[in-house]
Length: 383
Image 1 (cartoon, rainbow, N blue to C red):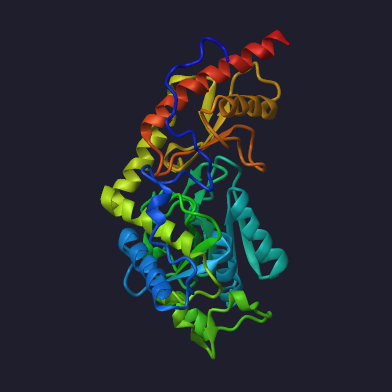
Image 2: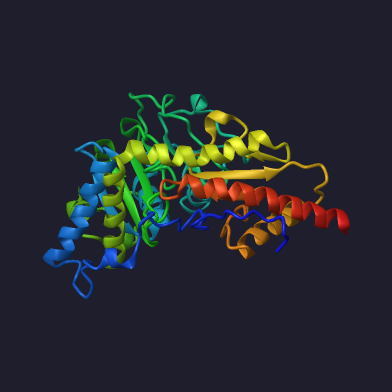
């Protein structure tokens, strides 16, 4: 390693955008109360699953009449369950400005073959929600994890909409203020802002979404794992901890430990503050250097969790190769793991700044980022 490398380094180099960094004081000892070797249908299993649901409601301030369910296959499973179960009753509008939103477009248009308008924006930009017809069912991501662009607020979503809003909020929940009255279906996974383990998704339904489920049956066959109703009525047990398939009780315990940490540090306002403080370190760093920029074009839409960066130096001719070289140097130095841009996104870096990350670690990372940039430029000029 070059002698001009910084001396200070992040205490935790884990800046992956999923699975994300564990809570700051995490240890395996915290999971000692997990109901291992016990049925999730036993009283102890049901109690822990129901507690995870109600603790989620408490931290996120979800309305009492909204249903919260733990479902299989992470955020993807929750989104697929919602789309397969709810869409088709009326025209849909698919909104996408990054990779995962584009995936939902494919599922609805090509797989379910639903009559849908498609509204898209390029990486770094966002669709104008004022132009969306909310009398259709609208499917969108709140935060574009692969583009670093988020919806700044829900002001453009009307209270008297005829259609449902189906929101993938997996990298927004616990780090952004979600307007629940504007969201009929919301999904997220444990492994993002709370640093939980993978494979479990959360499905949150408004009373309007429940009404749709109980009054509409899709024309297509419904896989068992997606079924939310029986005999035209909501399967209420799913939203009381009676999961559709077997959950990991170890992962459940891990999620509850993270929720307990969130409560102790000050709840949702503090989680939002931590993520925003972390992200601002990178935003300010970009402002001080003319060779790197935030991928988000409009500062109002910058994500405070998945901060996406692009290199703008005129000497760079191979953007992808340059970004990979910088990311590799940081990983080799054990300074930052897994921060390369998503495979479908523009060349650059993607640094997770969610609430479980410490601002001091982001500050240390910026010193190394400057070092890695200068080292890579020097290699480029010497070639």
